[in-house]
Length: 603
Image: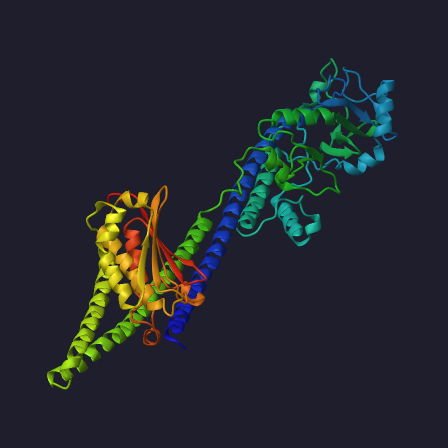
């Protein structure tokens, strides 16, 4: 494996390792960010549900307070002939034969004189036997002797189905074991949200029990005085009535308050027929600011009791569709569009890694190319220096030891001179290239006619062509020759000399013994074309012919003298004159075109 291949292999392994490490970090960062987003969403959802539950609790308190006077009034009421509340359709007594009894105002016990309309409606809706099973029996236990007699009878409070925390807790535990009998489904909960909902359920149990105990312990300030129901002579009745506990009962779609009442005529049921539609409207108006569009539903024996949404005064509960309620309420809902800056940070990290890889690859490629160029230059220069130095050493030893006949000494001295010129050109090209690389070729400019410019260095160009057995032909129109240009004369001379030298080295064998220099004028530049009639440039060499030190030691040994620096030097010098040098493929030899501006802009 070559050294450059090993270098690129190591570089590739380093890039793969860095990419793998960054990929591992990215995956873990994305996982942690997703977990953070989920926790944030769950926390926000728990906060919204907690706020919603607070609104529900406040609404339940308002509804219970709204209904407490109604329930207390109907519990303390025996005279059903008095005008009922707007929330009560009808108050009456129901006899064992399903006969509706409405007493006159002046009596306490019912009479058998109901209106026809009342009897018809009540008879179609209520059944005595069915109600008797739904209403609790009369408590006949005598009250404790307090040491004083009172003719006032205290009306029992309304009895609800759920009365203590033990029953409620049992229902909660049973619901957790039997999901099908649990409360209405809410939003899915995991993690923090599940803990929050569990705590919320415990709070709901405690809130329901506290409100139920509060209602059970309240004395509404209404008592039934049997003495107040006596006749005008204010004498107590001979047989006081027995009154049971008022119980809210759902009969079909109708809600009633019913209790047992026993007098001398037998057992009857006192009924307060509540207006369910009017109660719904009143309760909704009471909590419209907390829960707009709230839905109320009856709580029957077959219903799933949701403790967090149930009233304690009447068997009514809120229908909780939390998704709909959260959507209807403005609770600053968490927006999933709010993302963290992690994707941008990861994108920048990967872009940074890519830029770093490209920069290092570009730098590594430049260093390797420079290393190759230095090695090539060293081998080529070594060969170019070895040949003239060998000639110098051998010829000087022969001349010093008088081994050369006098008639051949002039030939030997001429050879030494040509080799010295060769070494001088080689050193001059290397120094000129280094100077252009370091300083950019800053020389003095001069304004001169094209004809005078070519006349200055035509002798030098002719001598170089003649030394190779070729002739130099310079052509330009007379008008072009009189045109003045502003340029660096020495730089133009060096470019043309290198091009002619290149034609002398590589333009043989030639179909013509001429090297042509043709000068033309154009709108933005003037153009010099140097053409030979040699074998031309091979296609595989054209791509690197302007690269410095492009010759290897083997190519230097098997080709014309030089280190492969001439064309690269010419192109750099043309660029320093704000011009360009390029090769034009020709069937008959090579053609190099030099384009220069009419006036060199200031540097």
